[in-house]
Length: 118
Image 1 (cartoon, rainbow, N blue to C red):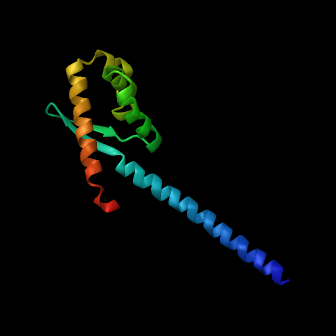
Image 2: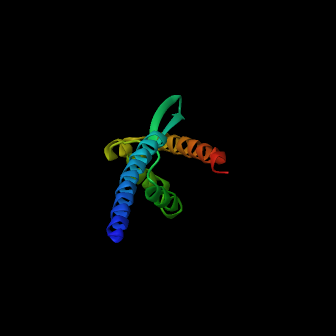
Image 3: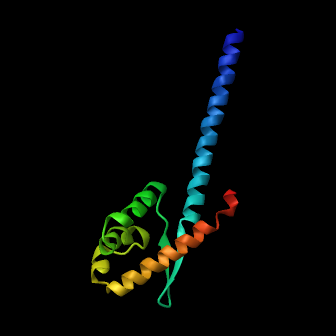
């Protein structure tokens, strides 16, 4: 009989844990959504970009050294800015370069504000 009580308590703890995991996931999604936006000023205009998820972010920055900049822009600007590939292909390279530099500067700025991790 005591064994059933322990099993019931373990089931209750497990159910509570599952509920908390769901709550944590929802909270993380909200935080990620809020934190994933980045404001970029380029050539007198403000753009809203997105910081990609962690896995894409890692691959994205590894690819900087592996591919020509124009190819990198074609691959990642749709993720960062939501631009259609056709728009990117028709952009002047100077505009692409300015957006790229502004994005990287803002990204570095965000990384430098990591004091909350210290």
